[in-house]
Image (cartoon, rainbow, N blue to C red; front, side, top):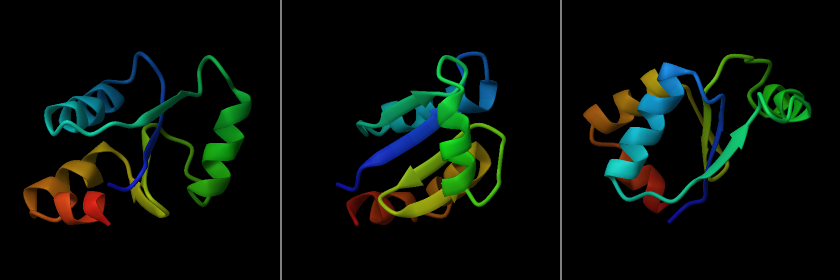
Length: 85
């Protein structure tokens, strides 16, 4: 399984929805809280090509985008293949 990294904040409903989907699928992920560690936000923006909203989701070296994109992959039946690598 590919490593999954999420850049989130604790109060973001889209972050919660993305984590809920991954939890439902049994996916282990690294959660980076950019509210607690603001220095990680610049790291996120660099990796996400300037995007500054949360969540920003990475599966392996692939930048998925946010919660909407993650859920779209799931609806299209493409998320499992991306997770498997």
